[in-house]
Amino acid sequence: MRGAGHREFAMASGEMTEAQFLTFNLDWIGAARPHLAEGGVFGAFIDWRGLYVVQLAAAELALRPLNMIV
Image (tube, rainbow, N blue to C red; front, side):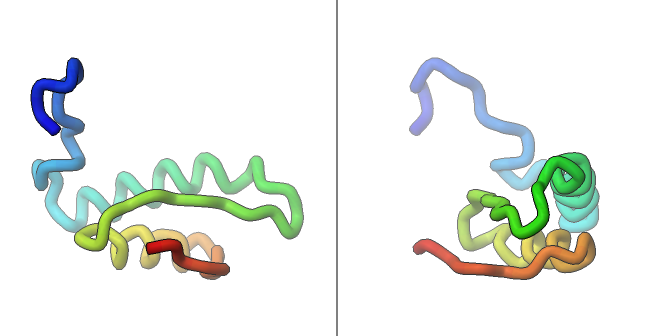
């Protein structure tokens, strides 16, 4: 919703190329991953347009899907 008191997120409106979005996800998930305890659960929230990129980044970082909430 526009006009909700905050500006649009740069990565939410297609300003990043697919390669840039993959790098972005590899960077932030990679930075968070060392803080996971063995057997820990990591959550990411994304709409359907970027889901496959987040899944690709997670797979490259040796994370496996547990569940999906739609």
